Length: 125
Image (cartoon, rainbow, N blue to C red):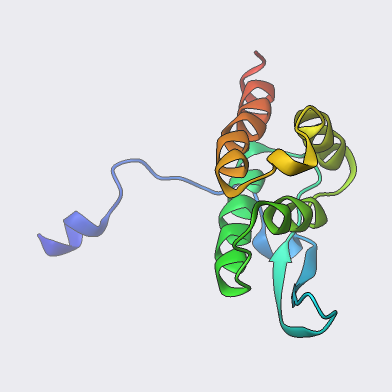
């Protein structure tokens, strides 16, 4: 019976192959120009929502490790994990925000809007 509880009620096959995702290296940079740590993070070029959600979660984990505790660090480094069409979509979304208004809170508020753009594409809306 315990084995039955481990089986998912609906089988899900991922559409992405994590081994095929391009990675970028993000660094912890200090005001004096030195760097201390680096971590790899997958990048997103605008393909599908599953891929984007994987990249966003990975970025958030790396951001915690690299102590990206300010809005500018989050915005600048998230842009580094985007490629192609995705970077254009992100820039268009944040273009209306003044640099001084790029806080952790605004980053956390704008991320669902970015994700919804790809949800809409996936559903055709």
